[in-house]
Image 1 (tube, rainbow, N blue to C red):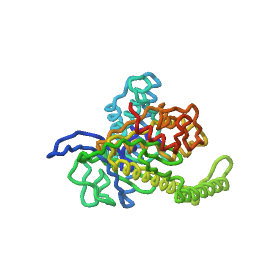
Image 2 (image 1 turned 120 degrees about the horizontal axis):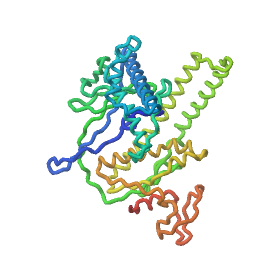
Image 3 (image 1 turned 90 degrees about the vertical axis):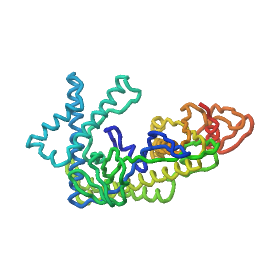
Image 4 (image 1 turned 30 degrees about the vertical axis):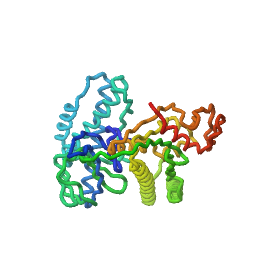
Length: 411
């Protein structure tokens, strides 16, 4: 799925990103203030769920409308359209009878959708013109079928009580757990993951600085195992377990089944969806959701366990994931391992604990270097899982040797 609107969802998925804000002295200990995201499941009624869908649809429509305005303006050589100008235009559109449905949802939903679209387009334009080092992708139009439904709720108007939250023009909605009270809420977003509705909100949290050891950990990422740490710990690839393989086998069976039903209901050059096809596609979406949650949970458990050893420094290799995805034999396995998500989670958890996080240079030959004598192999095939040094005779597991070299890495 694509998230053109600033890719905000990356910061609010799972147990999500931590941002270092400020450090203050509290007593004798150093206290670090961070912003942690809290994601809580909503339990709306049928009427409230319809209103949630209306808000998500309005946000999608406004986002696409802004992108269309930008495209037309850029094509005919117009001047830069500011965020305020587009918002005023949306206000005028709401007065027309044709677009009266825009008034059924909160005004802040449309306002934030305009801001998200402007930010996304500006990031892409600055990257193309060389004003920014970040090369963002060109924002795409949001699809009603493929894009994740989501919208913004004003943080000032977000009210909380016992296992309930108040959303604008929707009312009090029950939650599965308690939202922290008497605190400032940042960037509240409501999203739908294919099965349930969720509220994601940033909350400020105090973290005491931890007492760290002098140990330096090197982490080698791979396909055979998710991560091999220099202290000898090996974290398995969750995609090779029987649990995941059984779910993937069921997914393939359902996909073949729905494909046959499409062929059976084909009328000329068009496909006709039946009730059975809708049911099968719903089951397929739920299985994809389940697999994504299993992988996300495994990465969270792995990174938390590594950080809780409290080393002074963690060194991770920098992989060329884009280049690895071009290999048709490895692309699926690389995508399932979610290397970027692993690095992102490890990085913000290191910031919370006060651990130094280092990314090794992309061309650092951690796998080819001998840990004992420093000899570098000229050729090392991917099939060679045991590293043997021709110079000193040192023999060990290939990934463990790479993790030891990363632990000795110095930028």
